[in-house]
Length: 346
Image 1: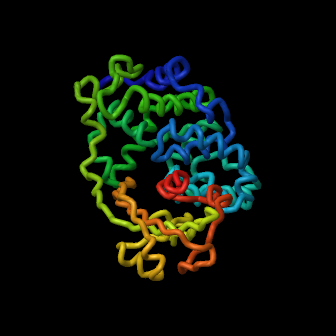
Image 2: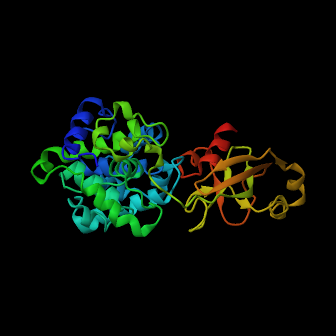
Image 3: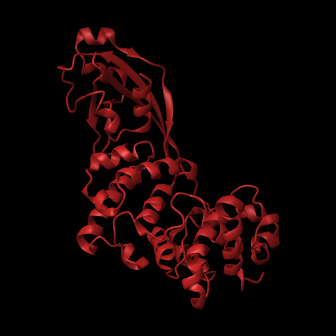
C-alpha cells in the first residue's frame, strides 16, 4: 500500500501554492462567514455561490443581523439558490447562536452539530477552518479523495459504512503537533483537491500532489471510487401555474405549505391540471387565459414540467389563499427560481 506518512504535509503545501485562495469567504477565521459559505456550497457550485454570498453579507453582515431578519427577508436573499430548507435552518441557527450561545459560535464540532442545519461535515469545516480543531470533513469532494487515496471500496451509499469512512478520513489528518498550524489549510486543501484535481471523471492524477499515497492511482482505476451502488431514482411531475397579473403589475402569490415543493416560498398557485386551474376562475377570466409552452425545471430527485397560464385580472379579484403582491414588493420575496424568471421576463 502507498505510504501516507507525509500526506497532510503535501496537501498543505499544495494548497498554499496551487489551491483556491481568492474566494470571498476565504482568508478569514470568522465562523459566521465560513458557516454561511459552507451552507451555501451544499449542492451548489462555487461560481453560483459567489454572488449570493456577497449579496447576503451586504444585508446580513453578522449573525446578529441574520437573527433579527425576518424569514421572508432571508428567503428573498436565498431565492434562486434552491434547497430552501437550508435558508430556513440558517435563520433558525442564527437565532439559536444568539439565544443559547451569546452570539458566539461554539468552537468544537460536537457542539456545532447541535445547531439547526449543521451536520458533522459542516461542523468539522467550521471547527477546523476557524478554530484549528483536528477533525475531518467529508463533503462530496473530500469523500472522493479519501476513498481513492485509501482504496476504500465499501459502498458509501450504505449508512453502516459511514463510520469506517470517517475513520479513513481521520487517519489522514495532520499530526496533533501540527494541527494548530495546518488544520485550516489542510481542510481547504482537501476540498480544493476534490474540486480541481481529483474530479469524478478524468482526474488529473499526473499533477496530483498525493499520487504517491493513492491506492486508486497505484491500481490504475481512480474512477472506480467512490463505490456507490444505490442510484438516484428520478421522477417527473406536470404542474400548471396560475399567473394572474393586474394592469399595475401586481401578481397573485400564495405561500407554499411545509413540507412540499418550494416549502415556505411565495409562489404562483399550482395545480395538477389545466382543468383544475380553470375551476378557480370565472367564465370571463377563463376566456382570457393563455397557457404558454411547458418548460422543465430540474430538482434533485424530480423533473417538474411547468405550464405557466397567464390571465389579466383586477387587483380586487380573490383567488383563494394568497394575496396580491405589488410589482415593487415581489422582487424582495423568496420565490422559486422558475417563478422569479417568469416574472422578470414579463
